[in-house]
Image: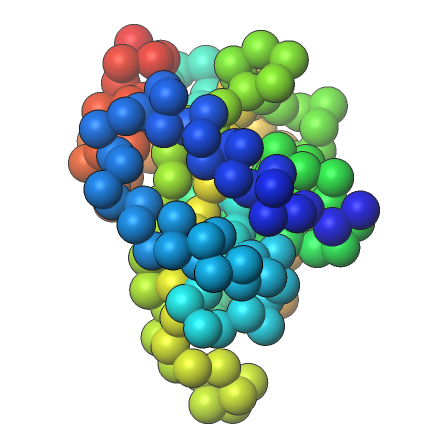
Length: 184
């Protein structure tokens, strides 16, 4: 049940209804959709591919960050889509569970039965000659979740640490504003 470009386009359209001022910022993704790139494939490098992330907020408003091993930086949990992902939200929850041990029963997706992502982060990934990957873009659909548990267990292959940080410590000012508005 691979996530399709039609699902990605519908999610993008719903996102832009909620955040219309970001229309110009998603031009590369719109181009890749128009050109019918296989955006669910991690091997799609003409422009890039879609990933799914999780902004997990604790009851005190702090946000879960992980230290990504390969990129050696602090990020929100998330990663590449897999063929078994039914949709972008499912991919977000799967990645969260894989990287942090926080499974569906430990978090509550916020935004109702069919939530719209809280953020769409578009960032460049450097070339990785060891994997034969050129520089490319990630279109990271980030979903907001509230944590009901804090028992984080890290995936040692990809993650070297975790921290619950205040929203102001996040690397994206746009996401800080959104989280502050939504979570108070």
